[in-house]
Image (cartoon, rainbow, N blue to C red; front, side, top):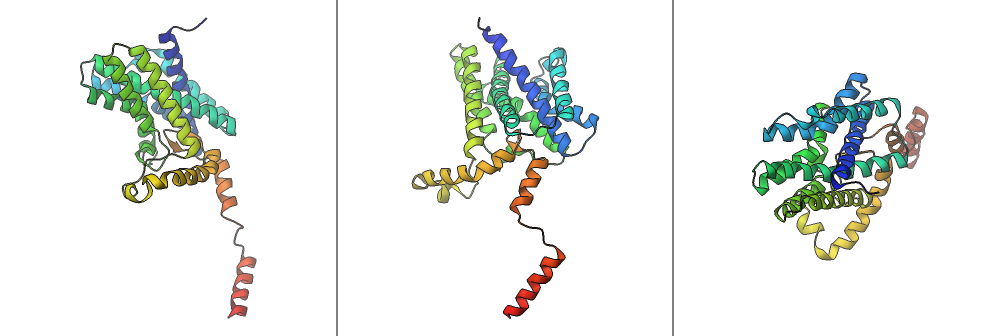
Length: 275
């Protein structure tokens, strides 16, 4: 027996709240915060985008405050991150997929709510984008980081943008449920593939040099190889990397042997002999 479309969307929505609550807790763990920090960052990461959306639209009380399930799932994510170390390749993969699914769901939900409030398509797309990535942006600012969606990471906000545009198109066609499903699938597929192959938006000085059509196959292949190790050591979080003990050990291994005083003296002696 299949779920009704709305029930299925609600499942994806709450799964995303739980996953982003865990991701907020992972940031708190990496910063060695106490239980209060876990709870606060989990709630902000999981619910911040929806709170911004409802505040900007001014169409009543925020849904995350009127529906207690949102706070319950966000707090459950904080508790999981507090009690269970988020390590292992499969843990990262599950969080990546759950986060990617919620990205499209939240982008479509925000866009649909803006359109139903009477906004034009362009402001509605903006609201959808804010809904999808706003929580992670606020979290990064609170812990003193440049928001990960601003660049230097694999495609994330791009998936939300495409999902929002899809929702506008299907809304105009009178098919909001189809638009929601299309947004979820497209955003999730793009986000997961971008993390797998290291797809990023080019920087401002790279368009003419790197992204010429003859260079694209070699460029994508090279970036895909370079991102494989980074992907294994990373935990997803609004398109960025939330590193923990495992990535620190990997960085130490890549940096080579430690320079002890004995090795330093031998190195200096070798230089004198060569001179």
